[in-house]
Length: 145
Length: 330
Image (cartoon, rainbow over all chains, first blue to last red; front, side):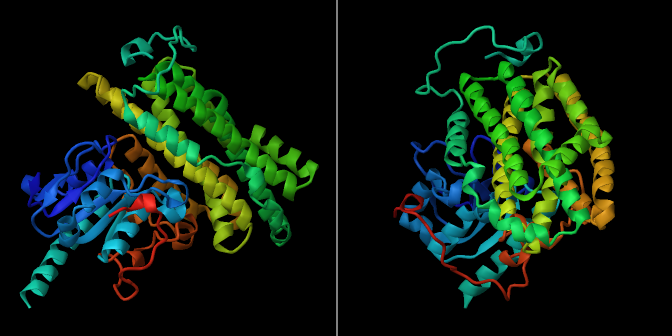
């Protein structure tokens, strides 16, 4: 399925990341959720976007990137249009805190823009809201050069 | 397996059990969390706590006593959670697999409780250990917090048990967890801190899972009942919070750390609420945890690791990260 959303995210049935994205109050067409089930057809981005993905605290960070996100990023055009990642997690996971975001950022050579815990505090929401606005401004001025 | 309505009348044991079929998972979160817990399994005997003997000797008598008291307080909570808390949730399970996950949680809490004894036997004398356990039986704030939680575990309301359990896992431990993180940030008792970090990791999964089940069960409730449970959650949190503040002053005033600990409490109270699906309650200006403590908890939690909130100068793009094939297979 094609999507022109600027914020694409994965959230399991616990819906923590989903709640965070809802709190950003972006227009509906600006956000898209990756399918919860690995078997479902993944999305295909048509515009540059930021990816939000959670880390669930695996031992030593192994297998931290959700399978659904791997499936999505295995589509070459999805990797090409990725501009940044935002990680969700829990500091209780020590070095694995938001490590899925680190892994994707390093592999795709994009910045890890922000980290938040669980469904994010009001402060996280306002920082990301403001940060994304600035980020897209920078991006459009870069592409205009 | 019962619905939340049936749970009101359920006894302390399941009335009926069927053979569990892991090939049919009505809630895939059960399988996911089971695997997570099994993969995270650890035992305290594998951590070389004896390497902390020299470091322990550098603590003052007051600091040693404080540390032992904090650890007996944590032992009590882990004991409650292992032998009563997680077990009390079983009859209220939404799925059979949830019952199985809860037995895993119960066992792991017993491992946590035992790990403090491992630390004690390595670092302290028998008399010191006995004194600390006596203190835990006599301290009014510690006993009160245990009593408040135990009262709910003995009740009949499965949802209220889940709330109490999540608050215990995600909030009540942290007045204690603060201290080993404090020592670790000063390069003291670092092996002990490694054990505590393993416990902290487990508690995060427990709080997340029990909070998730609370939210799933909430979907079956009426709007009035949802409101009742929300009010109850905040009332219980406030009641326990007041007691935690008193407990914190009692323990930490002598070493001048009480205010710092309270920030850590606020920060974790917010996380307990989020695990239950509620918005964070404490504002940012009282949750600004000492960066040294946060860094002992998670080395990449500080703002400099974020592109948005950091100064930018310290941000390095494309930092190499150890990855496994299963993380990535383009």
